[in-house]
Length: 624
Image (tube, rainbow, N blue to C red; front, side, top):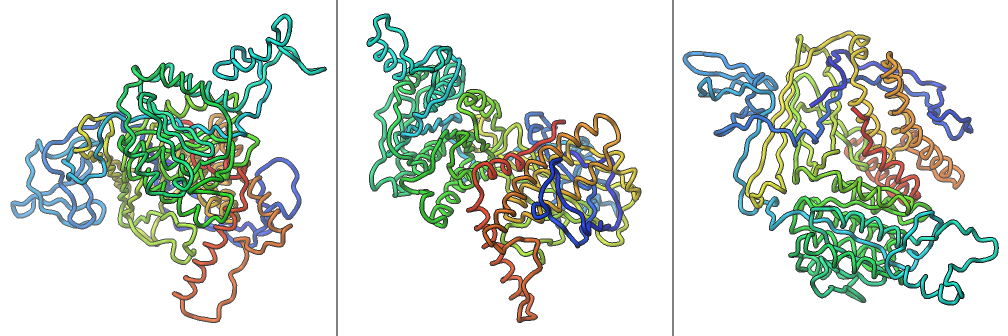
């Protein structure tokens, strides 16, 4: 658990007047209508942010024996920062978060003395953490006709059927040399997208220790598995049958270790050829279903085209496709499966839809040059799954409020529910996963000199050998000093925590279709980081963050400009429509419907480059 500063700022909310200012991050000149002009005041950004870096799950805490002691009101755990007093021959713990008196009975040895505590509890038999074996990697590869598109490379040594075809052409020359068109370069080779994907997968298969299976798709979906079984082919009308595809994937046997299957998989990989359409949706579902028996598994999809066959078809209306991808996301998330999506630069595959699956399961989404696929595959697989089915609960002092993250459909009037306890259902986490919380101070609070904080993490470890019978609870406790001096607080800012939170927050708002809110919010955060950057080190942090945020601002300003050119009238910075009612419930429902409509429209109109920029920012982490 880390914080946005060495101090919690105890100050009433301040506002900044941005009247007449243009919110532009890039250094280049832009037209007036590409900048947001605001005549409103916005909340002055502060450093009251809490971060939880899940990489710390690899570190061991103090394993506690016996049952944990919890506050009967807020559920806080008794920790090393808790105070126990003797009162009428009884031990009383006055909860540091809600002030509830709790009667306890503990010997000195049972009282926690460490700030990080681990508990292990038995899971009920129906636990979603149950597993039948070690996690696997599912390589889901597009072999549609467009994967034959080639590009220049200086790489030598082709593998697979492409090499055999080249050798067959060489026999028409007397010296069996390569054939060239007039003026064609002699010092380069041409490789197809499929060849690049084959090279990327083979580079992993040759060195990996985790078990792997292969799935391919074009007009049909072929589950090759570990290569020792007869492939399962899903074709025709079955491509539109969600339950059939799911059942086939779940039932497919995958019993061989990577040591046994490596050579067979490599042979089948290099025998692949490009042809046909793109049954990406059915392939995604089959791959996820195949992995659900093995929590902690990862699916890597590599594609260059739009899903146009079977369930998840993106060539028609968005609503059926949205339902399908949401359903697959929930299936993967509940089973502890991470889905990663890699598309090819220069193609359009509606990353917005596919990326929602990756985003919801803790995976990565990216547009990649085919020649860099091997490097990207390696990066993904180096990001180890640490826990599944994780929930994170933050508890803060009763005079603080944890800011909730609104959904795209929630009107501003209903977004903030004041609470000092908030639980996030995170799902599967890897070594690079991190979540953040933003805090507010209630009006006229009495906070004292320091404040308590507690994070409770409940999760399963896919590799603990228990078969999912155990659930783990990690409790993190800290206290933080309080100051009313904004300058002192900002002087002690943690740029890594703030940069990560502000970047991810901006992307979250933008993906919900709240373009102007995302840009104005980020602008306020930018002013804070600029104020706080005093040293060369901090200035470099600020410059790196500004570069990332500038990329997002450029694509958002471009989207808003395109809307204006097309006569669109749903910019989220416009004044709310007048309503012929004083009923707040009716108004909130109308606002909710309008926000949902704007979110859908903007999601549909974002191209892959825009979506990729926003998804990248949403996983942005300022290096510590």
